[in-house]
Image (cartoon, rainbow, N blue to C red; front, top):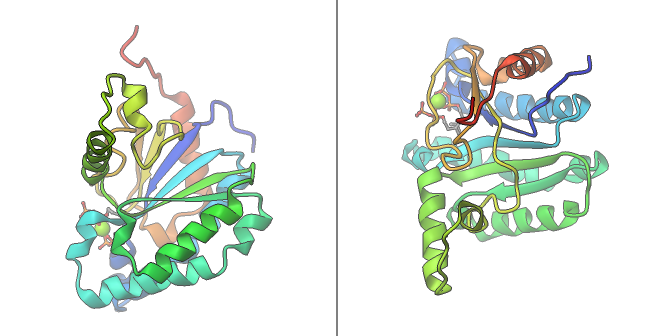
Length: 228
Ligand code: IPE
Ligand code: IPE
Ligand code: MG
């Protein structure tokens, strides 16, 4: 299906992995594993549907409150993913990582840097992973950078250049699975005029049909940006 009025940048809040596992009597980490598979499929769907920019919220700064074994399972999944980014390269996709990445082991940070470098010249989908990401943390980090450089920043555009998302377009559509209707500290600056689509579907069950439905809903929204 060819979609009209595609959003330039789609953000995904991949929520519901834990409940997906609980429903099956499994530990939460199994939900995260399944969620990882859904993420990979979703990237393929985004490419097929002709999207240009997508950002996936995979771990928030607040998720550090989770039990140690759950965090360890998530770190292992991120590491496994980073070990095989060839697929992304083959698909001409570019990988970016945003967040307070110093939280991750140096070996993982190195893999992230290498993945960014290896795919930097790709011209297809730009796929950004938000890892240990928090919108408030991002804004504070930007202010700290501006102060340390001794700069005066007066325009929104210049300020945006200090965010982790520097150079990326604002997010137009945010899709949240798992039934909650909140932003949970995701892209709070960049989502100033985003459209929202919520679904009760748990992230591991989210597929192409629902993505297409969300894109259709987006295309029918009237965006005024404060105008008439
Ligand atoms: C989203 O699923 C993934 C992360 C936040 C890492 P959750 O783990 O929040 O799943 P639920 O919301 O508890 O079902
Ligand atoms: C949001 O999900 C963060 C990610 C999907 C990474 P949470 O499950 O952490 O959000 P809350 O706690 O329900 O707001
Ligand atoms: Mg959740």
